[in-house]
Length: 252
Image (cartoon, rainbow, N blue to C red):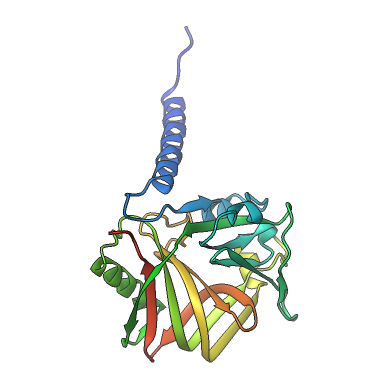
């Protein structure tokens, strides 16, 4: 009779837990309540950071096949950032010491390594006079979302518009020596700016850490400078002037 050791049972149980976790996450991502938008998630940060995933998982042209799609993420091979505003993609690539470049034409080979997206036909906006930074803005986003009936237990998108006293952002680059995610960040194109105007698209979730938000944050934000068609990942920000915060407008 074939028997299993305790160690083997633990391994099998571990695999079962991993399978169940994957199934639960897929159900959670694809199923939201009827009053909130469905969030699509392609790829995960944990696969990028811990498993070395670099192959694209979604074709951009297919992800924006509908009108009013909003999304953000990283491009295949960690070569560039993407933000999608009303089904219009802005892909920005850069290497250290060189000026960023934009990709406007899409092919069947234009793929994202990570993409979070949703459909929003209308937005509700509120103007806030509160000073904020990245450490406090997530609390404000959650509080304002709850005021208009958004359930923060489910992921949701938001927009931030205004003048930023300080803005730190980067464009991830494939440059590096060991291929790790930290190595890519170290060698990525970075910029620290003061007194700039821009628009941020973000996604908030308290259940997607290491999926599409980092382990210490509940949001993932990208900035778009529409006059220059440049975009990138937001690392830090400071706002002291009035700013506009927008959420999807849901049917009554």
